[in-house]
Image 1 (cartoon, rainbow, N blue to C red):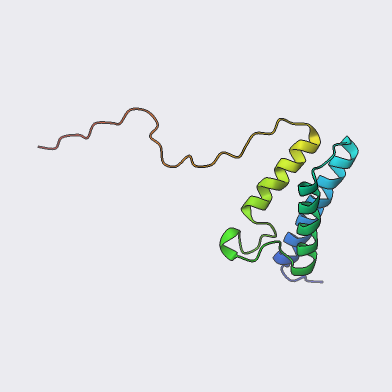
Image 2: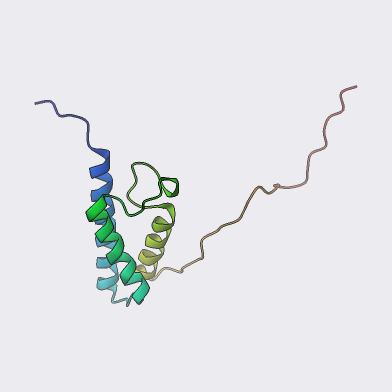
Length: 110
């Protein structure tokens, strides 16, 4: 029997719910106490994903087929790192366009 193409929205929703459950389970197993904000974040994002299929409304904040925005991905990674006991580093932002070494002189074309 031939199947149709997979539903990307449903796949993203399942993956997001699994990632949220995995983060909560990891914290519970490690005995790490999540802050009130982190617990509320996990619960609210789970509810939004279950209800709407994604956890953000503005399409400019994430991909069309994604269930999390970029910042939600980062926060989820930070929660998982905290649960695993890994060192938490702040997100690197504002790098901009920097030169990597001395500027090269322009060739003269007489």
